[in-house]
Length: 355
Image (cartoon, rainbow, N blue to C red):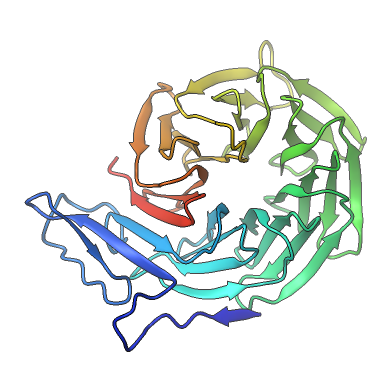
């Protein structure tokens, strides 16, 4: 169940779970305002391009590293999770209150996604399970058991039946039907799996792992359709493009690649390579993301910056500072030019992109 997080205090102490609005005055001074009593002037600074309370919002409250965070499809809420084993629910607008906590895992949460309609939250955990939670009530709907190692990644199908795919340190990829008991399919990989998603039509699954390869699996035939080589180190995150034609991969070789995963492609399926971000000795699973229109991509980075590239020119268009630890997760808002970043510094930033 959701535990309501009562943040407002009658004394002068700072609330444990709070949002901080940062904005620049015309004289270029930066004000930091308590999230419990924020009043942000709308008259100063450049024109605004989103409905955020301020161009940059800092959300704090997690007690450990944050590994995953996602916007709700409707854009009014976001969910975050990490080492502290809890799912935090935040308002995106206003003072970005942390209005609820969802518990249920006994290990760190490594990946998190909303269902397509936002009704459910799917989580992958080091407790070797995949969790399904009601995003409104916080009730755990199911706890999917079957993996024998850490579950590094999970992802729901974009359309059709409520299917989920998961990838694990037990070197398997499993698919699940939310309506049924047990695992629907299991695929054996040679090495640990660190990223997994469905293709656009949910008849194939796409995985990456410590063998450096991107693999596409046919669910009905239970076979690998093709293996895409190019990365020289572990794939830490992958993301299907909005139109379903391409997959973006983030790798410990300090590169991102875009792969063409359409059925019939002549020539090399690796169509673009992006550089600039960093991985380091921490070897975190740094994720990546597409903008809703597919014109930009973003990636987490160990050097504490958020990197955003133009997919056509391959140039870095934003390099956003602020975090004090590795940036593990990035996600684009579906309706507005806003990007979120979640970090090992236990904080989340919401940033307005002046396009």
